[in-house]
Figure (cartoon, rainbow, N blue to C red):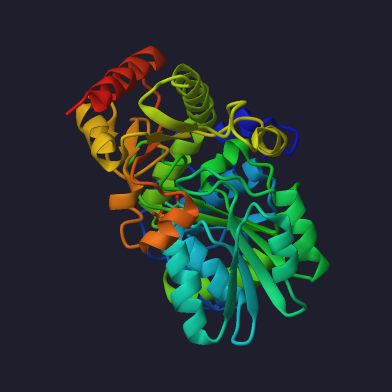
Length: 397
Ligand SMILES: *Cc1c(COP(=O)(O)O)cnc(C)c1O
């Protein structure tokens, strides 16, 4: 892959490895292991595998390597390690680098499973975790210490779409020598410039926009070659969280079209946010890419566009939110995001159901909040579907 290529070229051609057959589309090497010509060759490969040499599926695979190289090129990272899911990437990156006695600072507004890993798993092994309001730079400054090994946050928080200033938090973290780990799912690899803004490690759930068509689980950890091959790979290859070749192939093909998809999704998301500004049924329309978002300047600076997710807070609370969801005809009720199909989620009763009430209100997860992952359908059709469902949600019962 040429470093001079622009994004859309890298997405189609980056990382491609052709077999002796010269296939056009990337091959799926659905094999656990690899044959060695001689015993000596096996010994040599176990001692030091070359860049095109593989040993066992848990360690690496040609299709998985194509995916890793393609996304590393896209993100501008030295290297990448593909994982079985987004959570294998989050837990793998953290567990690979931390040890008992280390301190971590994390934003409080996190995906439920990320919160579980930080709050319930790492702490069991003697890692101390301090949670802060990710948008409050003074809180980050107050929380970091000389023994802080890592800071962790979602660049755009799920589901309230608060934005963390990557460059500013990185400066605070780097002043104490901490590694900056960014869960960048909502930014998508297309809008991300996280590494140049100061992140050391970037993580994606490939399940979301990278697949983009709701088929397979996957994740990826991106960082320096030293971190990926020296810290992440030894941990992941021995603990079993590697990506399967079939899923890597799905994700590779997803990367080919991701720029077209997420740019279209972001445009439609903005059109939806715009169309809903004055609706009486809504207490709030939250879209980071809309001028009405309190952090819109930061969003434009950090990622250009506002991403593919809009949050709607229905004035009539949970009953209105449920009426809205049940009245939608194109948008489906589910809990994935980044899909070609538009998806609506009621976080308070599904993805964030287990969060205590005080935590929900602290994070802004109100009873009326609906998370809308905008797909690639016709924008006019979506606006009509949402408008009609809002009207039904607002009718007196
Ligand atoms: C979905 C998601 C994850 C977990 O990804 P999986 O592929 O479901 O394991 C982690 N972080 C964020 C922000 C997510 O949206």
